[in-house]
Length: 232
Ligand SMILES: O=C(CO)[C@H](O)[C@H](O)COP(=O)(O)O
Image (tube, rainbow, N blue to C red):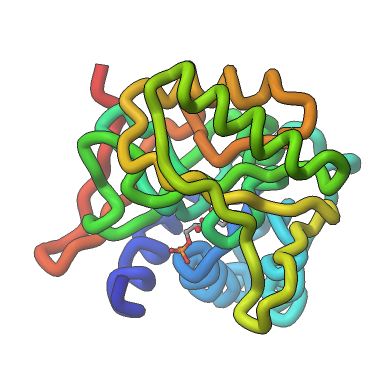
């Protein structure tokens, strides 16, 4: 997505931010564009308090003087604004490309409402072209991968399951100290069923399928910005 489209999506999201709101603040380059739009409004007097979904987001908010709290101090939030790697017409999402899926899901679940910001290329008919991030415990990694593989087969899904590494070739570690495997299933026709089933595997900490969490998506395209609501 071009920087311009990210900025447009971020700017459009601002119109949903009201004075006094407790905001969940997402992770990723589109969420960062939103934070960069939010910061000057805060400086100009908009009163909000944010809960960041990652250490990366926390650092940017601190740098830009966006006031923060923790989910411990503020366990109920009004609105979360976050990016996504893919979304379908029902606003089921794949998230976790930036590795923050666990905190992102905890924050989204603690929010009365969630708005996704993305560009048109992320809207798909069926989720799964983007590899599904699954956060896993280090202990028993091979057993967990095997269990994910077996579960996928039982749901007629197949594809490579790779352990995420950093550009430097080290294991990618989440803010929670866990690892991520990326499952390239290609198509996930029943995301809710897969999300529930994955979380029955003990070594799975959380998966990147966000179902029935987003209320709206702000989709930026060259032709303009559109608001999507979940298809019934
Ligand atoms: O889920 C995420 C991070 O865990 C991001 O929201 C997702 O990866 C989209 O990122 P970007 O806006 O950079 O494309």
